[in-house]
Length: 306
Picture 1: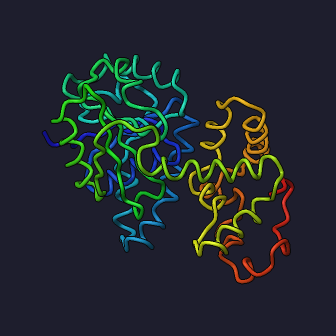
Picture 2: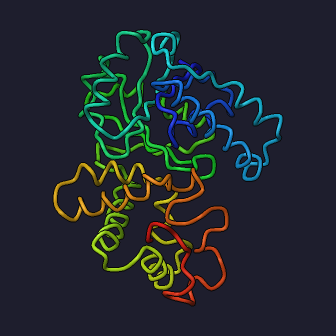
């Protein structure tokens, strides 16, 4: 079956990117979120993607305008779930929220519809029963800035029908992505199994005041030759996601990290999507001359320390 009618659930950073990428490649896309306010924010995110597609993929303004216009925005779940081939869920990384949503969604969908979670932390087997169709459920994990970092990690669970995995693999190619099918469930998939411990270590150094974010990034970049440090990567991932993860972890260090992240998000410093996270965009400090040669000097002025 060709997966043509796509429902993306959640218009946050990745949800909006998934919706845009699918529509850009000719899929019929509906983007659902819980309120008109959330949809207004999603529409702004979609509009901000067009210049990136024009610059990075040489898409014409006419093509990006058509892509934006083709995405149907709605807060009516019943209407959104009608005539859907594939649901891609990209809502907060909180198990109770996901389970509750799937329980509401399942009876509204066509019998043959597939469901994929974009969760970066949870195993599909943990959520499968709540979908009402465990054989048609798997994980489909996109990396941020998907139009250029175009990998999708596809991870089924013990009850996923191989035919569903094959359909998702083909759909991934159809929307310009590279499918990577995992052999078995793994928390964090491949990418986050490598990335999360790296960012976790950086956050704990920062959260316990061992060093500020710029110093940590400079050390990493100087010592390894990497083009960016962990806090530049965190700006791409988004500080809201980082807060969700640390706020659910036990222990005093995690609590301290979560509080410091919240101090930034409360001021609207969410990362690349808002133009300010640990760095200010465009032209963040780590890309400017002298960043690596002036340890401790010329830090950006901020009402929240880095």
